Length: 90
Image 1 (cartoon, helix red, strand yellow):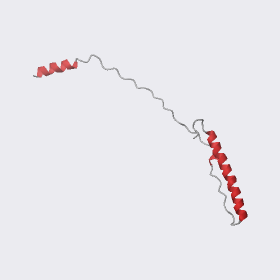
Image 2 (cartoon, one colour):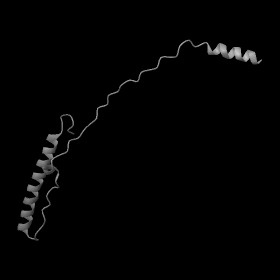
Image 3 (cartoon, one colour):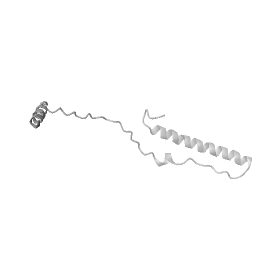
Image 4 (tube, helix red, strand yellow):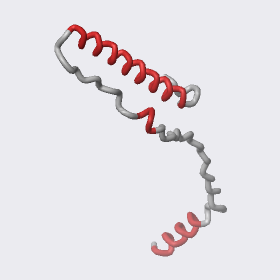
């Protein structure tokens, strides 16, 4: 019985003639988005115009000052968008 098992094992071990060829890994290139730092002058907070009194003249001054601050802030946002590469603007 022992001899039969050894003959069977030797017979099965001799069936494979060559080792299978190893598969070579495929190189996959993944695009990586890199971001450039923005200049400090375009990333500062938008200006807050404080109220100085409770008069009609102050309301007009405040509206004009806030409009000017909004225009300046919008200009900086346009500048930030212009720094983005083409196809990245949403």
